[in-house]
Image (cartoon, rainbow over all chains, first blue to last red):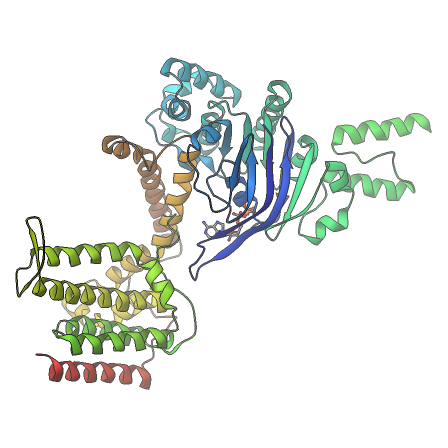
Length: 286
Length: 265
Ligand SMILES: Nc1ncnc2c1ncn2[C@@H]1O[C@H](COP(=O)(O)OP(=O)(O)OP(=O)(O)O)[C@@H](O)[C@H]1O
Ligand SMILES: [Mg+2]
């Protein structure tokens, strides 16, 4: 399911003295089956954009195409549940949304709301829990007895159990330990590659954006600053630093390495593995 | 969703009203609440209305904003209005709809009471719009200071109040966030039968309470860690200063009270 944003604008508290322009003239496409990363400085409007993807916020100007539906400014929209079933959002700090007595019930909340039978929902809860790397006995525990990281995983499982076609992630790994981050990011990537799920990731980690995404949207002060492939985006270091971002560690290393070497390597390497291969190939040459 | 409410919110700006001493504003409001009840005919209400308008203009708050922000309250006001229109039986009958008859006295009374309610809400919301919550509590603490002599924990009460005021916007933001998160999981807060709707708020209330308690606990720990131990011997960073304009404002109010006395029937 493709999602297309066209000239979207949103203001918080519109029409009051507290009005605040959050995003404007935002246009980009999220191709079906792809992995899109949205990067940008704090307050650049990333979370606001995400909330438009399942119409939790409606644009004040412009329109959004979500599959075959078009959400345009100023029109009353009914039946948004279908969109929300197909576009699952994991919010920033999703552990704050847990409320049920047991982990199992909490994970089932989404599927049951979307009309999945109880038995099927429980089945999905077990699968989702395994995906986020928690043992099955956690299902019977209260979500409030878990550690922060475990709560985060349960919250993510709650969205995965909805089996959305588009998975939208707002900094899903902020505050997790390095191992947990890695495992979770790999899990999302494999859902995208193997199950064809469309992934949208908001992240402050340029490394994650470089490694997993096939398209990057750069946001700055509520506008789309630039879109492109990771190679296009990260080959222009000064442009990134100009808006408070940076290139991934690997690219920085490669640049320093090229300086010492006196000539550029064949291409821009986005992961340490790739760079290591490139460098060892170089050694083979000489 | 919650962001349009202006009740209890502070709108920073630079105006005479913003610069007034919070104590003067509190006394002013207190006085105003009393003298609103003096009005009982057209002239007195007109005078009150003009007076309120002047205060709003002085505070440089746009009237559209006030009205838009007070919409939820206006519904209550309309309700009281209709209550009086339908249930007061005074004066001539104006209209008869089925078994309901509308009396002239009822309409007039309804208008007056709604107007009184409206003016009160306008002026009190001006207090919070033009005064940072922290100043409101400073003012209250200072006004009730004498009660410390009779062992009323004025400082602690004021602190409790300022903390609650401080966290109202936070709580509203949080409500908004959790609501959206649950809506993203298919929760529906706006339709369905009554029992379904009551059930629907559980996914909202539980996380809200959990985070409120957590926040309270963290705040208490943070305060203790920084050596907070109540009002005894504590000095203030923000000092209140009474100016000429504060005295003038109160005199202005006394003038209004006198005029109302003269004009009321
Ligand atoms: N509920 C809200 N009410 C009012 N203004 C808001 C609200 N949420 C966000 N904003 C404002 O909208 C702008 C964009 O915020 P947004 O949350 O989309 O940024 P972000 O890119 O997600 O930032 P971060 O990286 O810190 O999560 C900011 O200026 C912010 O202050
Ligand atoms: Mg954000």
